[in-house]
Length: 256
Image (cartoon, rainbow, N blue to C red):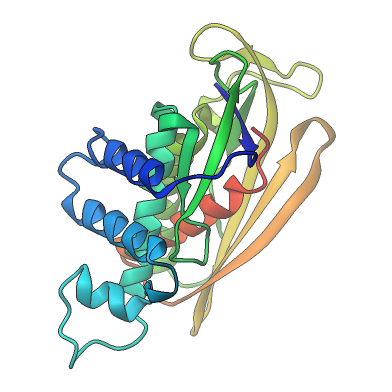
């Protein structure tokens, strides 16, 4: 269903809690107990208004059981968990229409959920255009960076597929040229290649910089570009967190 934001009717606490309960009982959140606790806590704190607190310190202690005497005020691991929660919410709404048209989301860079009433119009369909992601280029001298880039690419493919549906590797894409951009979506309906995601990663002694660009394929024009800087760590957690940040940024600019 096509979704449009509708703000003509106030959203009640009862509607929010009902929508949250439905989300937590879904297969996307089934047995994801940590994500269940995190979403429930964030909603409780948000509904508490001025008495609520969604700081990383409070989340670490109340949700993840950190020791107050050892826990610092800011912890990257908490931001990773918030990113995973955003990813699960996006996956949930990809598979389900919002209960009573109430959508719950967590904006990038925030810990506080946002509640929106969505007007449902039109008929259910896939995206009308393919989104392709080219292999991420590694343009640094440090050898260990290549494995990180390969893992980042795989993580991006998984997360972008959850967010946007029809996402393809360049090598697996329908045959397209500048004069023939048509292919078939997974249900056999016509689809057009509209956007290509192009990126590179550079590594020096102090940081990893991922440069991501969104290209309007028909006119070969870069419509959006952004750098994402991280400290030099090459683990799976860093791949996942960086991919989540990139996907959430793309979510704001890729047309639906």
